[in-house]
Length: 104
Image (cartoon, rainbow, N blue to C red; front, side, top):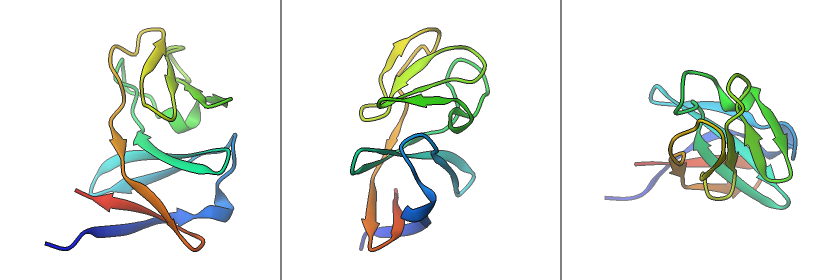
């Protein structure tokens, strides 16, 4: 079966401190830029429902807007607070200016 990639936005909409939200078949995904790289992570804090893309992004981390859990954007690991577990990561790539998420 061929790989399927879905458009999740455009690179021009993404900056180091402003992630974008994307819904893939009902799943909330946050797309982040760190330097020249793009990362896609589960967007709902595992501690309690809060969209991480509405949190504070700084130097490769995102902080939950409600509970102060902090996650490493590159790895999804919870590095502080009540997150409880790592965030699921999604395969992401740039195709020209289009951000694409791999459908699994």
